[in-house]
Image 1: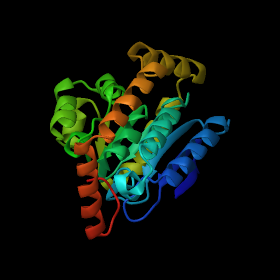
Image 2: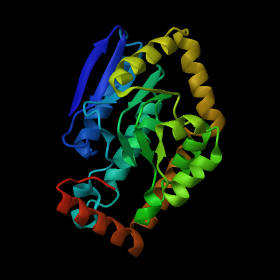
Image 3: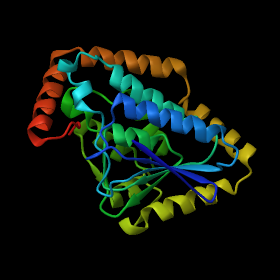
Length: 257
């Protein structure tokens, strides 16, 4: 489910779970393992997170696991957060190549990277509010740490408003926008450029930036997980997720809309 390739010192990890890269626990575990291997491999100077599907970066958490009927509780979301934090903690440069849709959990993975290159026509959403949930304090803070326009983040999380590539660039949530055919090459080029910085100083500055925003504070993530669990167990989230799962089943997929 993770296609691994190397391009001149850049490790590309491409999500490859048809049809829309729904994030199952198995996929997330495989991604964490691939991230850990890239982190420890001295030949890997930078990392790119991409998709094999040019129309979808990821459609979000797999509803066959997240819906209340699955009986797994918040374990899928916990696995997503563990993967986000593992990716964010990589001391090497990381770049997300966002092509097509980056929905909820897909966008949460992209937020973990140091830079995001969007394809023209790509869109990102963080619309948990429509399902009776919140992206949590930790992920709102992560988004605000990246954004030039806090209003864009508020619109994403309070209204469920998607951002297209141009809007994400204006808000500071995308670093560049390229034609879809050039997306992966552009992301690799950006990763190589970031890797030209001395590695020890890059890792230190990356760590310091995250510390300044409190993004590695275990208490923050613990608070956020508890708040998510409280909402998840409530009637509004249960109804929202059940309805989303039913729609996904009718449409023949398993992603969060």
